[in-house]
Amino acid sequence: MSECPWKKVFDTHAKEVVSANQIPGLAFGVAREGEPIETGGFGFRNVEEELPTGPDTVYGIGSITKSFTCLAVMQLQERGVLSVDDPVAEWLPEFRLPGGTEPQGITLHHLMTHTSGLPPLASLFHAMARSMKDDPSVEEFRKEAEDLEPVDTYEELVELIAGFEVDMLGDPGELFSYSNDGYALLGAVIERASGQSYSSFLQENILAPLGMTSTTLDTDRLEDFSEVTELYASTEKEGKNVVRHAPGWWEFPAMEAAGRLMSTVRDLLSYLEVFRCEGEVDGKRIASAESIRQMMHPHVSLPYPEEIHYGYGLTIQTDYHGSTLVGHGGGIKGVSADILLAVEEGITAAALSNLSGVPSSSVSRGAINALKHIRPDTPQFDRPEFDASAEQLARFTGSYRSGEGASFEMYLEDDYLFVDMEDATHIAQPAAEDVVLISIGAGDMPMKLLTDDQGETWALSFGYRIIPRVGDVGELTCEQSECEEDSQ
Picture 1 (cartoon, rainbow, N blue to C red):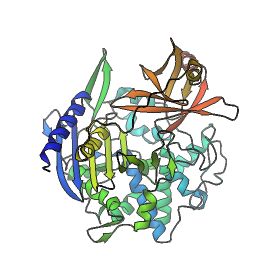
Picture 2 (cartoon, rainbow, N blue to C red):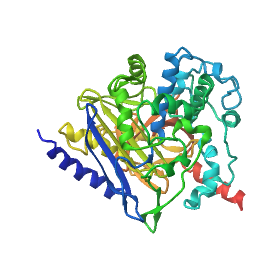
Picture 3 (cartoon, rainbow, N blue to C red):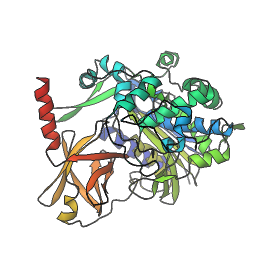
């Protein structure tokens, strides 16, 4: 069958995603068995100068970096330098948990699978504080950073984590909660185990062997590349979403292993070959087949839905319309990125954009969908119907907040469950007795109830993170009012 029909359907879908989300520029690429089928771009890498974007435009890739971090750990394990079962304390003896307690039982495996028990923390904001304070393009972040003590080194990060007065979520291996802090610590382990900087280890052992010449952690190198995107941000103004130019890449050297890499679609398609080909690309052995299988193994199930899991720096969906989907997304200021591998079909895809909070994953998944002859806008998982009682919904009500900045309130009104979040109100649709879905962007986000031994709600799993319940409805509003009074 000709590739043209799928491309027409995909192009229509991708253009709709870009238009609906006011994305300034998005680059994409899709390959089968390592051979690019289609690469290109929509919009501009520089709107002001109308410079086009494409597979060779350098974008940020955010948390896709985490898979590189895990690949580096696996390479060190193959050399006998370390093991994923090593206690974190073996490599970072100075590391302490929030409150200053010793990290007993936490291994590298737990950090790699986000199951250490660390709650969402504000560490990344401290690591980015200098960039945020110096960035005139996003005034709201400058204000947030004013009172933050900058964290520039691993040593300062460890001290910061120990100083947080928050409870751990559970014992190691008990719960999944996405942790940038855990991956920052893995970066420190890589440096100590290898005797090299994180950047130089990646360059020597992953980027150079794969010919990823346009991938870097160093913003000073961006001037060496012919195509580099500008960054953009969005703000709601008079009820409308306004996208504006927001130049300036944020630096966070203490946590770069969690999400600092910049790359291109073409380089990422080369990188995905490591996983499609079980570690050997163009005759070069990047990692053993066993290491790649460990990275792609579903070590831990996400709270919802059951068929989505986390491996080592990768998400795994075990049954997506007959395919196993492996990949990861990423987002930060001016960055929304996604990579995917459909294992059985040998199809790889990447999508990079220059605006945060937009569904680049809808484009990468849309390409794979089109090639599988299903609708490009087919969602990641089905939206089930569940008839929940008012009593069941009432268990969700309350105020929720995490140290990483997430805060929202859930309340019942006229037998509907509402979620107030970031100046927006969402209706929560029941999907199971302990799960509701809210529509954000182009997809559904699950919120799963977590209860204690007495059946009392203590947290929600939302956005891959566990968000603790801090009180009844109105708790956040009251605390905000007190903060404003204190600041006057």
